[in-house]
Image 1: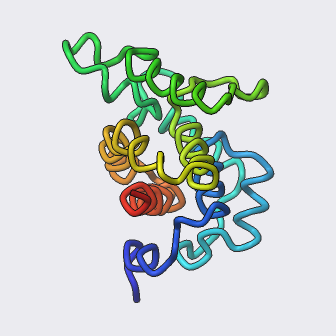
Image 2 (image 1 turned 60 degrees about the vertical axis):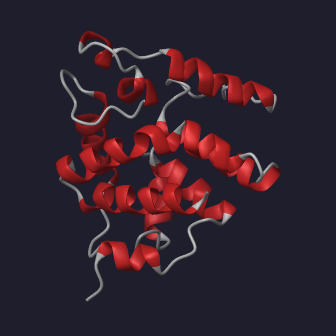
Length: 181
């Protein structure tokens, strides 16, 4: 039987549809994700499809809280560098830098998105935008942002996830980010 990494390695994860699907999976789970899973997303990796309630509970435990959560999905948490006190700060210099990238392409935050601009889902969606509209800029964006923090975040997800879905998502995302440059 193939490992998670072998299954992911056999796929071309760089297609715009795949990038969009992976990015969408990092948002709060809803019926759209449930439908994608029922339609076969990660069917090779998952022996059973998780329920929407299980996904929402795990998402909250891993990424939201209450209290300490093991895997904050924000670049600024991993990149503020400096003191230990800064390590829990969001909206740092890295956030301003990623927002500058979005502005260069006249992109603004979706009015329905209630989270921060350096959330993993947003950065992956932007990488997908670049792959379709300005592929020459993609390597620079990846090296300045996702590749600087996502490996640590994804390793934490693999370590702390109780549902196989999030472990598989972390593996697929890591493969995506490392193969797009």
